[in-house]
Length: 308
Image: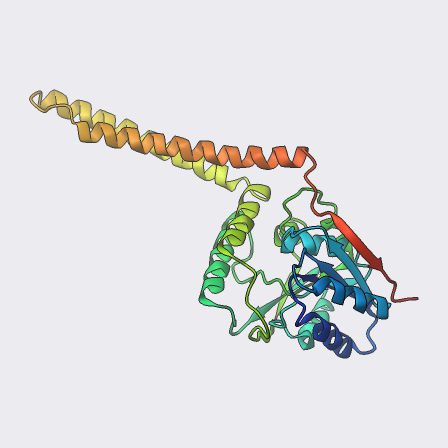
C-alpha cells in the first residue's frame, strides 16, 4: 500500500517540521509521500516547507497565493496525491501521526473511507459546540449516519479520491463530497491530544462559512424545509381567517384588532424575506460557480516523487 499523507498547512512554522519527521518515523517501511499545501500562511511556514521538500523526495509542496480555507487546501492536496490511500491530517498534532496505522488497518476491511473518532475531544468548548452543530446539520441535510463523526483526520481510498477531485465548484466540502459518493464508510477510535502550539484557526466566521457551504452546495433540503414551512403557515392562516370570520359573525361588536393584523404582517413578511435570502444564497453560489471562481490559485510547487 502506497500512502499519501495530505496536510493543509496554515501558520504552522512551529509544528510542521516535527510533524513531518514524526510521520516519516511512524510510516517506517510503508511506501508513502507527504503532500504539504500552504494555505496562505503569514509566518515562515512557506520557507520551511520549501526547505523540507527540497531535502526530501518523499515530500510534495504546493503553496497557494492566499488563504482559501481548509477544505479547498485539502482538495488541492488530493489533486496531487498519488497514493493508493490518502490520509488527511491537520498540522497541529491534535491527531497524533502514530494513529495513522489504525486508519490504514481499518481500510483493509473494505471501506472506501475511514474516519477517526474520539473518546474525548481536546477542543475548546467553542469548537466542540461548532462540531455538534455541524454534526446535527450533516445528519439531517446530507443523510450522514447518526453514529458517524465527521472528523478531519481520515483515510480515503485512491479511487474515491479520483471521484472527489472531479468536483470543480469553488466551495468544496470534503465530507459532503464523500457522503454523496459512497456509503462504504468505517471509523476507528483514536487518541486526540491538546494542541502543542498556537490556537485553532477556526473563527466564528469560518465556521458559519463552512455551514453555508454544506447547506447550499450539497443539499436542497433547506428549500424543502421552507416549502413545508410555507404550507404550514398557509394552513394556519386559513384556519385563523375562518376562526376570525366566525367570531366576527357571532360577535359583531368585536372591533378589528390592530395587534392581530400587525402580527400577521410581520410574520408573513419575515418569512418571505428569509425565503428570498435563502434563494439568494443558492443563486449566489450558482453565479460564482458559473463565473469560474477558482477553488485555489497556486503560487508555487515542488512536485517530488517518492520513486526518484
